[in-house]
Image (cartoon, rainbow, N blue to C red):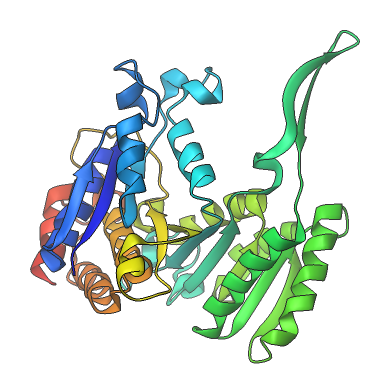
Length: 363
């Protein structure tokens, strides 16, 4: 059965890598309808909001969102509502995309691209589960102000037990289907929100007796990720900690251009309503950012965008077979020596399009 995907390429290298993802997606599922819209800086330049109304309307009637990246230096001094990143903020908020899932995997042959010793990252395969709609990024009050003539600013970190429960269950369920090891990261020795976090985790843990639970303070977790990355399976944590740790984990692979992500919410996909229950509406994006310094040069690594399309098939369309085909094709492309510039390490790099064609040829 066909499906509709809202395609939002965004800024910088976003359009280039998103084209690659769409090409691979159509190669395995030609029945999927992709509807594309300009967002972010491309929309702002036309005098439109970062997320125009027509783009938002397409998301409303789609099964999932395939997202590129947003953010450009010329907007950095603007208020959030006038910046490209506001498009992503609105989508996360409006669709309550609370569960950010970031698989971190080192493909065979890319161990030397990592800044760590090859033996530390060989076979690395972990997942960071980040709570995405709560915590300090969304808490209020959030403002800059003047306190008796002194410039001040305040951000509020707040979590409620139900917010913690649903993301922690996501982590336990993922761990149950993998190597049955969940690491919960907090800062309970200092933060009240983390003390609540740990109590909730401990309350839920008995429901998953087959999963080994480990608690780490966030500073220790950051250290252990570079000291013993292979010991991790699934990491679950709150919004700000997850933002930082997932980028740290990503760079273990040698390039942030290889890492996909899925942001899942409470709304079922429209396809799920028509067919199989349990498929989730989600937003799928590479985590590498807009990289404006290489935009338009045809050298960006499309791996993360292509693998994000695979996650879209898995979580929103319940199509494990084609998701696995895409992941296997990417793995074989690397095994056969295909390298974009970010992971070339002395070998002749290939272009964005050439790598994409190599993946399609191996499907």
